[in-house]
Length: 111
Image 1 (cartoon, rainbow, N blue to C red):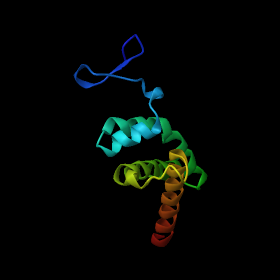
Image 2: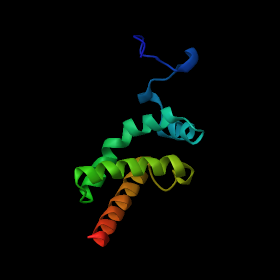
Image 3: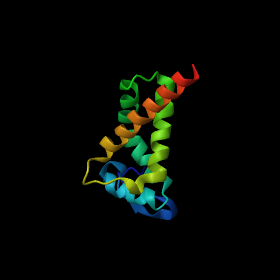
């Protein structure tokens, strides 16, 4: 980051600092293929997703896997997010709770 508080993207382009970019803008960029936008969403919401996985009863290793699966789902299916039905953080935590439940039912079936 430059000392003037402006983030300089690739090839000399100037972009807003990540904290000033909306979820909607990051999501739009991610759908267009921006891995940087996905990283920005992860940085912004990863802790909340991890907390949701832990509340669902996951241990920390399963919770880390749930976070990875949640953001992979976001990458693969972001166009399914409907902002009229809720916020992106709520959608991500719902995915995390569902993934955590899947891990529990799968591990119970294996045991």
